[in-house]
Image 1 (cartoon, rainbow, N blue to C red):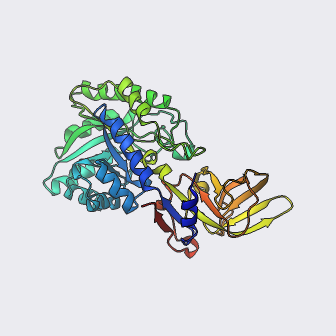
Image 2 (image 1 turned 135 degrees about the horizontal axis):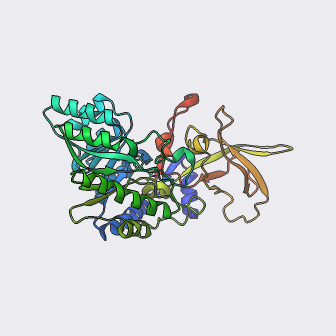
Image 3 (image 1 turned 180 degrees about the horizontal axis):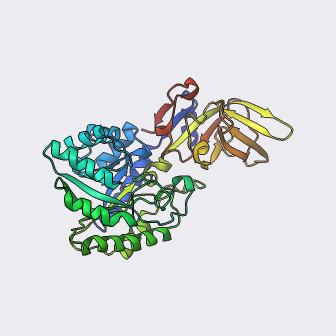
Length: 384
Ligand code: PLP
């Protein structure tokens, strides 16, 4: 819900733009930090969710580490000033250059996703006379019960090392003198709203930790990834229940006294703190359908086209109008039929020039913007 002051402010900014509520962002970060502190859990922010510099600044200042999935993210994390001892680097396809750069930066840990990658990191570390800290990303075959396009922890997914390869993995680790095994890593998917999924994950983490210990490995780090979802249908219910989330891991993980538990949260930290504000260019009333055509499209917000994601759509100009009898397909201007933000969306009768908010766009929004159709950079505005 935006105040009238916000809406008047929006009217003076060139649309489309991402609006960041930095106070809400800070409150969300504080809530997460406090809840994690109760159990002494370590949180790394998944930079892929949003690398807007203002957002990163706040996250770094709150004391979180950085979870990176490319060399570019590792570079950015270090530039921004994240503590390199809190930078972790995952990804199924790390290039030699990315590995070398991360070795030069002495990051905390590589989350390794294949046996071949172990060999490559070992070789490259040897050339630099360095030791690389590694955690094994295990694919635990746990269903995240989320959209199949954002599920990562099932046997058919490309991520991590499958359980049947772990014996080979352990052998390789023993042979790689330049690698220091520090623990195990998991990330089973995103936008997880059923917290029972995490109980299942904990059971598997306990099993895999025991498996490595039985083979003589010291498992110092249990990194359980991220994935905590947000309520896209109720964007005003803004701060996720971090307490309930962390409690599950406290209750169900068997953590030894010498072990650390690490998390990699993205969406839950930033998702609700932004909306994409757009203007209605045209309204086309047809026989079968009514269309609202916005000046924002899939080039600004890709999620609906990419994985049929839902974002609540609100007509800010008509805020307070309770008659929502008109159904519209809300679409963008891009020359693709998938450039659609919502079908049959009930809204007050809408006119050219109305301001429309697409809510909950803080995660995987601005970062996925593209120049397709030679679109210009999307604008950005902040609450402070
Ligand atoms: N960790 C890894 C390895 C990821 O790939 C991702 C994103 O999918 C995350 C953490 C963060 O996920 P989320 O934004 O759902 O918390």
